[in-house]
Image (tube, rainbow, N blue to C red; front, side):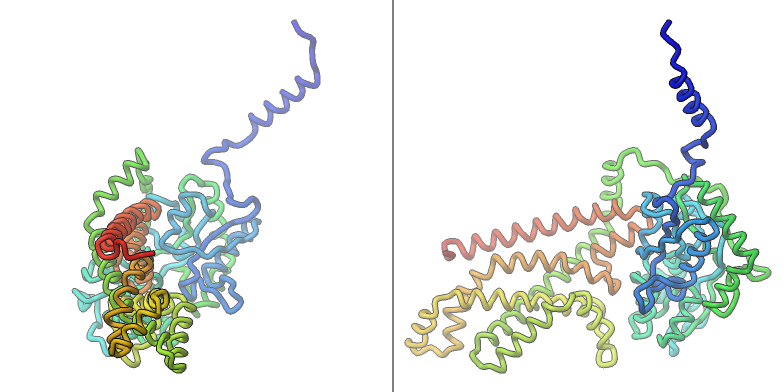
Length: 496
């Protein structure tokens, strides 16, 4: 028998005592993304619940509620801006502790996250233009309704119509409504009211029910959920929630109006575990092919039409820049610098929203023309470089034979320049294909918008983004093969 080691025995005894006394670390343990802090998210695009102020700080009713809850838990509040459509998945993957973002409690959401007791009650409402014949819920039948991506309003809208437009934010949808882009918007009645106060020319019509809004946390973090519930209970009892409500809305929306009820999920089963990520990906790829193929066809239309128009624009500006006439050269340079120096998404919004006082351009053509003018600036430089690469002696030879400058360019310079421009034009075609994804910002149901909408509807952004990546890869491969075949057929032996 070995010698007795008292320090070792004491150490092992203390260790055993600590193990015996500690809490179960699995679901019963409070987990935080950042120790000592409550990290919560809001969209920052849902005034007055959450928005970015002039100092670029997140503020609003949701933000103040989140901070108040953190103080009740003796934690430091960390408020982050995050896309609403991806919040549920962000919680389930542990990117943050909670979402204080006006989530309506629904059965489907409750299968993926756990909800606190409601911290306010609201409800969807239909908004229309002042001259609209829509006055009650029955009038919504069959009209075009806009909603925000990832919200429950799409479900409500689908109960009334099959013509649904999905925007990134409620404000964008309301602005589009004011310019006549669709017939109605369904959103939270407070959001719509504030938008009207901010000058958006729409009116509130019929209420479409009441709903409970709550804090969302991970289902496997019950201790945090229980503490948030307790914190909300104290804030409600102290009158702090009511005070915040009056500060932002001028009324108390933290209490359910007398005589009204809302459905709250009880013992909702968790979302089923996926047997294999790869098999799930294949399942989504196959089952969603119809909606993705429609999105792919719209993407192809946007790309091909915008590139064809962009080639005409680019050629015109390339010739202007080579005209030798200073005002025309300056005009061409100004176009190239202006278009290449501003983001494409801004150009799309200008054509979609900014010109409505002059002309209301349909969404497809607003996106197509923005893409065409954007691509045209790059194509102009491609053509200019290709034309300048042709030996000027050939132009002079044509002129010496009695050709006019225009005829010499058409018969001698441009055919050779087109062949030399073909490879970079092929690259621009592929860039234009991927740039078409920005049309999603004006509710065009092209590939990217299909993927993000489906991902938010199924709380599975990553899988749907991987699926859309496959579609983009197939389209890029097809275009690359087409351009390469065209190069071989038309340009073999002409380069160098």
